[in-house]
Amino acid sequence: MNEPSHFDHLIDEINDSEAEQQQEAKEQEKQELTSTMMSQDDFTANFIGLHGAAATFSGIKSLALPNSHVNEATAEEVAGVLYETILDIPMLHFMLYPGNKWIGRGFVMIMYVQGMRGAISAEMAEKGHKKQKAKPHTKSQPSFEGDVSPDQAAALGA
Image (tube, rainbow, N blue to C red):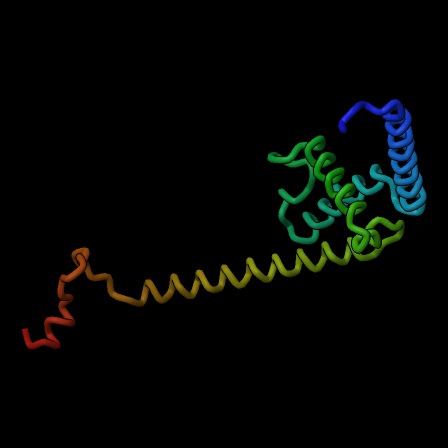
């Protein structure tokens, strides 16, 4: 039988009370965890500052925040999302401890790799440009599937 129980409201109160206690415990745990970490404001200041350092290090002015494409409010929002994401991933908590050297080192490594990528790309483009200049330009008709190229025709004795 599926009759209403006179104890349903008591069960609901107990469930609500347990849910509130669990929420309070989570908030307490987060407070204890973040009490030794840098605040979101400090993280945001470091985030924006590291972009400035990267701009100085690399000579790429667009890396500094704010810039012509990213205003300060957007940079602060992105830093806030990163901060919350780091809080959600225990393995990344080390990034939020004051005096952390790893974020700065990571930025330097990224800037180095990006600089090397740019240098390699430029060199490869230059080599490709030199090869293109070395080849004589011959005007050829676009070939269609089934068309015989002059080299193929010569090989066939045509």
